[in-house]
Length: 281
Image (cartoon, rainbow, N blue to C red; front, side):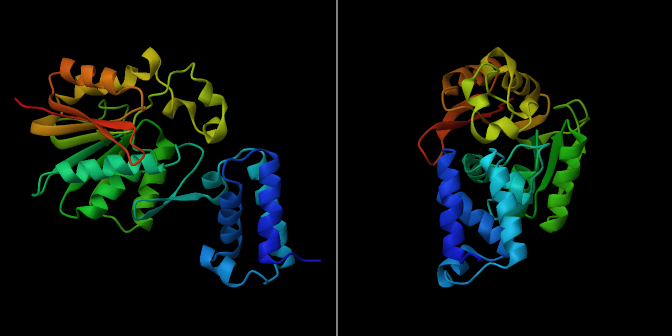
């Protein structure tokens, strides 16, 4: 006997509860909407509608993947970020709501006229694409060391019809020549390699190279701070996302690299999330 939509949701929620998922009902809704290619409102408008055999088979297959801990975004192949729908792959981090705070702060600090922005470690292109979409007169360059990430970011730009952005392969600044930017933004690796959270939840499936950094998670942030001064225009801004408990250390790195107007800003949960600084020559 086929399940109704509500029965299917209850069935998936029970299975996810059994493996201690922190978001069982939400996960079930996401996956069922993906199978049906419908918005969540459809599930609550037609709870008595029955799944077809093909829909049931696909839903069960997706449930099994989620039971193994695979992130919802990798299962569905996309994640919504800002006002964008972005394709995701296991070669890149999954864009997270916390990073939208970085986009908000960057938009508030960007000059009102035409300018250029560099996004270091762009991954899916989330930050670069969000900024480029909101400010069509600016030019954004996103770089990533991984070829697969650059290809994915380019695909996301095409599918979101954003043209004032470009993506190239580069190990941080190594592939950037003779260019000064109005702003540099980055969500670099900042997790200590010994952090026990690396063995929990979605991050088990994400690329470790995009998560961990030596020196208690600060090595890449230190590199970006020290090198950014050669690539920023006078009065240009540097914005770096980091861990909730790294604000003090990151501010010290900014000051040591010669930045002024240094400040750590909080995300929507009230946690330290982004440190900003300005280069005053």
